[in-house]
Length: 111
Image (tube, rainbow, N blue to C red; front, top):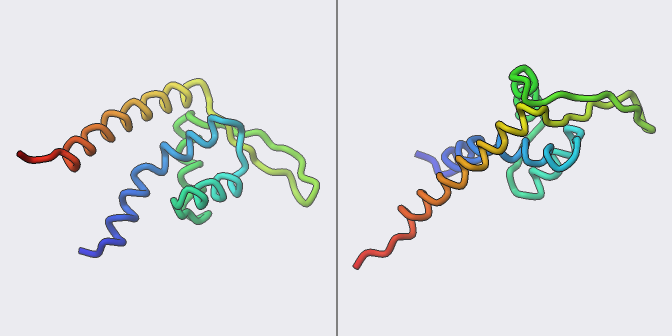
């Protein structure tokens, strides 16, 4: 088993939470989301992000607005729907519980 494959799977597992959290702060353009994910060392390429955004939109968790751009065609800016806000709240609670469980099982000292 290769460590990099496991790392990639772990990042993919939290990607939805991270993307929705970024969008929850303010509506976001996909390249801005990618930049923030790269800054957090969750390396993502457009080929990974766009299917996720589409899936979240189809699930009615995201929606988008078109905004004019000074440098080209109009851009899609994503924002959370009310259902998306509730879903993100639940995801954060799940993450907190999971994070606690992982910390308990990986950091517990033996006597």
